[in-house]
Amino acid sequence: MIGEVDGSLFAARESSVPAVAGRLAVDFGEYLLPVRGERTNPVDEATTVDGRNAWVAGYDVSPADPTADGGTVHAVVIEDGGRLVYALIVAEADPAVLEQARAAVDSIRFA
Image (cartoon, rainbow, N blue to C red; front, side):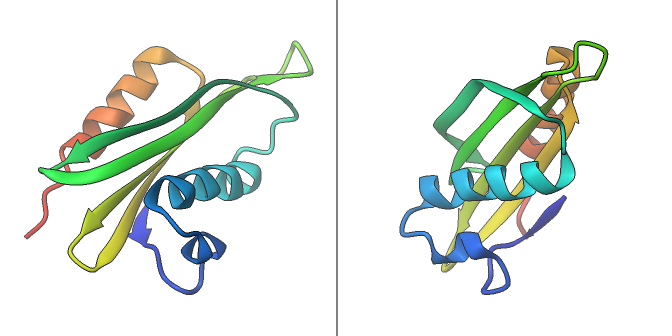
């Protein structure tokens, strides 16, 4: 999912790009990946997308139910002039799938 961080998102109220990314990861993760369990492998780091400053925040979810599938949530917030754009990754907890999703985010180009 890709969108602009605007007033319709609670994350827009945060005071920094890292905080916006963290809030998006939690908000969207709770909504789109409703797997009860423990958050593991936290990610909170600077990156770039198409030469623009960006921040990625996220985590894996190890389900409490051993028969359930886990998942990965990563929110990438990109600074594009005066606006913030986000790319959201919600996927199965598989390093290969996450690598493919991150490659898709890295392929974003701004006109």
